[in-house]
Image 1 (cartoon, protein in one colour):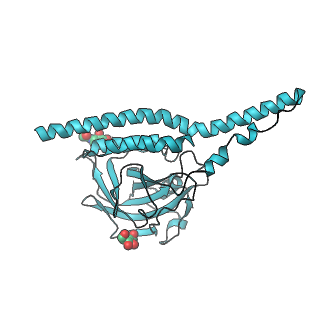
Image 2 (cartoon, rainbow, N blue to C red):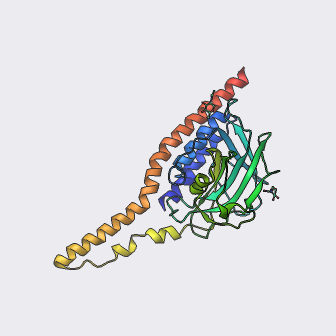
Image 3 (cartoon, helix red, strand yellow):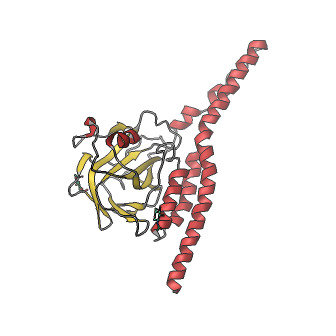
Length: 284
Ligand SMILES: *[C@@H]1O[C@H](CO)[C@@H](O)[C@H](O)[C@H]1NC(C)=O
Ligand SMILES: *[C@@H]1O[C@H](CO)[C@@H](O)[C@H](O)[C@H]1NC(C)=O
């Protein structure tokens, strides 16, 4: 519950930092976002992009990191733009573009993440992702998070695709439907390179309720304390369950919040730095 309330507020402050036109700063801001939103390291072990990725949805424009969008807004495929952090980052060659659903913060991802888009062999043409000679393993399928399951984090990931790229057989044919998969295992097994750029949006359907009932301590707290010695053990197990249930809800959000505060102030200073740079440029 806590993270569902706190996260959008923190993300709102990030939107300010994102409105810079300095790609080197934007890369750092997106990295901070992935950390504070818990995508790194829970969903992706590492994320060190050398370019800014921006998804541009018709009628929305360039989505800022973590921007909350509606199902209707993200129904049609966005265009994807990629800008190098600096002139020493080259975006030639082939890439694999993926969009995956990391679910709500703290949700169980052990069964994999939902693959909403997977295109091999895209190129970067004038800072835009081009699919002219690409193979769509999974065509873009707009987010459709279950009602009440909280704000899902949909990440766009652009992997370097070396010539030795060789996808596992189950992902070697086009037009495979949306399903769960392990994006990290896919990248490893295919021989994909590093994630050169990424970003994410959030989409929520209805009001979060599912995770509340899943981790609610109400049931244990209503257990009647049993008398005498069995009471001690029952009470002990009850409080253990209560605290482990509390830990389950607070672990991800709690550690996330520590990061959020650090990341937020980092982003605030990035935003400040960016405006200073902008002001300097205007003055110069
Ligand atoms: C260019 O950006 C990349 C990625 O952020 C960074 O690792 C590298 O140090 C930068 N190079 C220069 C010359 O600033
Ligand atoms: C390329 O993009 C267009 C527009 O989004 C889409 O209709 C088409 O299916 C895509 N092709 C591939 C191979 O991804």
